Image (cartoon, rainbow, N blue to C red):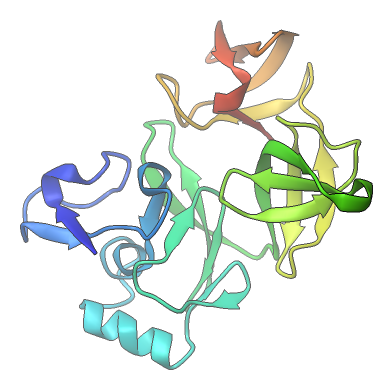
Amino acid sequence: MHQTRKEVIWKIPIERKGNKYVARALSNIPESIPVVIAIRDVLKLAKTAKEVKAMIHNKLLKLNGRFVRDINESINLFNIIEADKKYVLFLLPTGRFTFKETKDNERLCKVISRTLLPKGKIQLNMHDGTNVIGSKDIKVGDSVYLDFSGKIKSHVSFGKGKSCIVMSGKYEGLSGKITSIKDSKALIKLNDEESELPISSVIVL
């Protein structure tokens, strides 16, 4: 599964000149990076796709605590990839992806929707495609920290005074603080200026 180099989203930090075709993520293409590009081109832990495949075969790569099965698996924002060390996919203030070394065994997820299941159970649907059973107290827009078994370890409600990161849009990658909320938008202080942004584009920490 490939795409032309020109089609690669700008936030993926690869050279704009080189082979015509590059790998494409299996899912959530606009908001993720394929394992092969992460390991070979960004982290520089392999020289070729063949080497990345060998790492997968030898069970040297984990994504969110489970072994990677395909070189094109999607690494989503705040996911944790484990190779020689553990790295979390983060956004720079420029809006480009970067990997930060981490020792965490929990990842940050934004609740983008909820589904009512039989017997009154609530399924929480996350920004990275993960689905977990949660409580009625956790609302759309809130954040949760999941351990590698998929259990919710902590919950951060979306509200005034909370620190946040812009996940998409003009201010993508910038950090700020929520000063007020009205309907589906939040007023956020970014770089000493306040901007009104859709709640859907912001994740609280």
